[in-house]
Amino acid sequence: MVFTRRVTSLNFSNFIVLQVTGGPAQHRISAGRRLAVREHKAEIVALQQALKEQRLKAESLSDTLNDLEKKHAMLEMNARGLQQKLETERELKQRLMEEYEDTLSAVYSHEKVKMEGTISQQTKLIDFLQAKMDQPAKKKKGIFGRRREEVGVTANGATAAACQSAVPLQYTDMKSALEKERVRCSELEEACRR
Image (cartoon, rainbow, N blue to C red; front, side, top):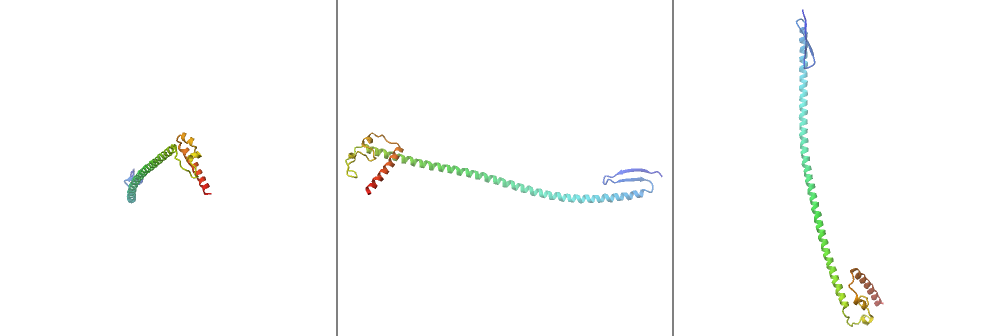
């Protein structure tokens, strides 16, 4: 009997089957083939089980991905909402600042007009009093029974000659003269009380 060997490689399990044609070894080879088929079926079942597990994992990952996409969309909506709210707050702050500046400007203008009016009234009063001082004095008796012309002093404490030639004083000069006059008046009132 002549033996010929043929080597066959199976892709399923790296299992090499030797097939001997003719002779009593044929029976042993078919037992080996049955064993290889069983192993191959077991591998198929294991692969199918692994495939099921992978599908379950893929579905789980798909669900997780969908949940994450929903959360991402919600976060984007929240971010847009916060951005809009921030813009609204900035606009409100800008508008309030403008209103505050307008109010402050109006108050400043009002106070300026009041001060200008007061200055104008004071200037008119000073001019009136200066004109009154420049008019010839009537012969009236003063507090102590003497006429002012006799004493030679006018109402603001200046001599009559100096009063006639004086030009209108500046505001600060008038203010200091007013303070001096107030001090002099208070001294005179104290003298009267004694």
